[in-house]
Amino acid sequence: MPNAATLYARLLASAAARRYIRWRTHFYGWLFGTPTTVLETMNATLLLSWAFALLDDRLFTLPIYVGLTKLAHVGWANEALAILFLCAAAFAAVGAFADGPRSDKLAGYALQLGAVLWLCVSVNFLASYPPLNTGVLVYATTAAFCWLSGSYLWGKGHQPGPPQSEGQAHG
Figure: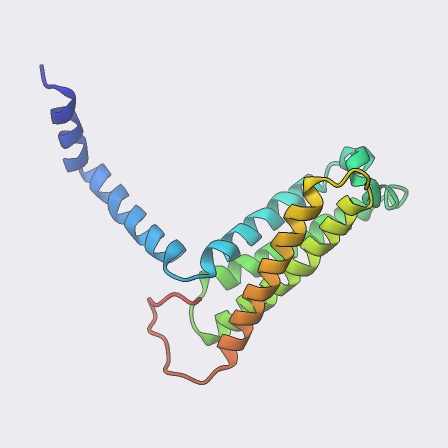
């Protein structure tokens, strides 16, 4: 009967494990290879999750979303907000996954659009003050980092420099 170390060694030697390790190494290189890719990916994911959450009419009735309750009487408000967040998420995802100076500009604009949306979300949570809640601080901080990173990428995309190779990530 093989021991655990032998089974682990066999597992790592399998073709599936080698493919997974190669994919994981490539993914980590992409995600952590530049200073902004993590934030771009997080921004796109959060925008997408908010887009789906906004489709539920009951969200507007929760006390913490007091800013949104003012929109509750407009029957299509949550759908319009969901479409706005979905478009911003798509815009952010395209910017995060593309390479080159153009994608730096696109990613910069996408992060700045996300920053405006996160600031609006933060203000919505601030409307339920007092007490001060984490939604205000978390989304205001997210907005600040998105705006700063977006400004950095936008400026980087406008700087003349050597062309990036096809496999080189932006950031």
